[in-house]
Length: 263
Image (cartoon, rainbow, N blue to C red; front, side, top):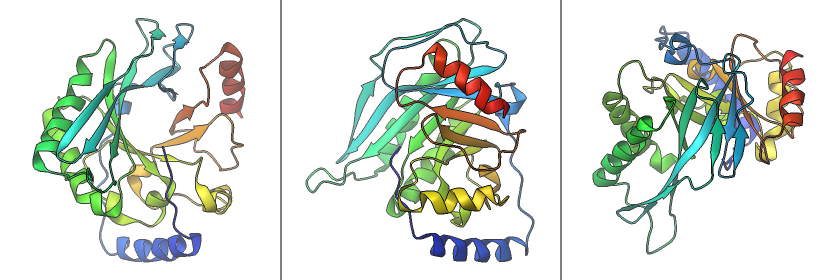
């Protein structure tokens, strides 16, 4: 989940323009299938490492696990499945996360072709066949030049998935403040990652701590936080919280998280 941040001054200027333009027309509020199927209010991200989460209360906590990494090289899609064990109770709701990376290296720069898009749609939709998976999430730090490709990918994926299945995406916090490219994407939520925000980390956190909110409605349904960073933003308790850990989850981490989310 690498960050690419603009200057905060530019973000605020973009935010002002966004709000002014948005006031001229009503914004369509998308449905949130994650709420419809009752995904719990806390979701643990389980990345590529062994995880034992059998002790979780499935009524309170879900797990978003890295199911695969797909790398775009030239006109090919390199498939890397999860290789580390994940233990959960049969009742735990799982969200299958697909990490997408695109090569920028001369000689194998990603073509972003129609063929690659169709392969991605097929591979991502297949993660729904994994045991206990009830939702799909895509994690792709799309550059400006990749946004049209990403939008078409999400549109195709939404069409392929059953209507009741939630489709989620991660989003850099800067995307949610004043960058309108997320507007009307066919996803149930864009999870704003308010951690690892680079040079503007403290500025964005102060902006949120002062009671300000994300301009993009898709970003007002959840938060993405990390266990090793202090949470200074004012959290809307009605929103779902995704939590990233820098190490495998332990019982102590879960106890600390429970105390933190209560506060």
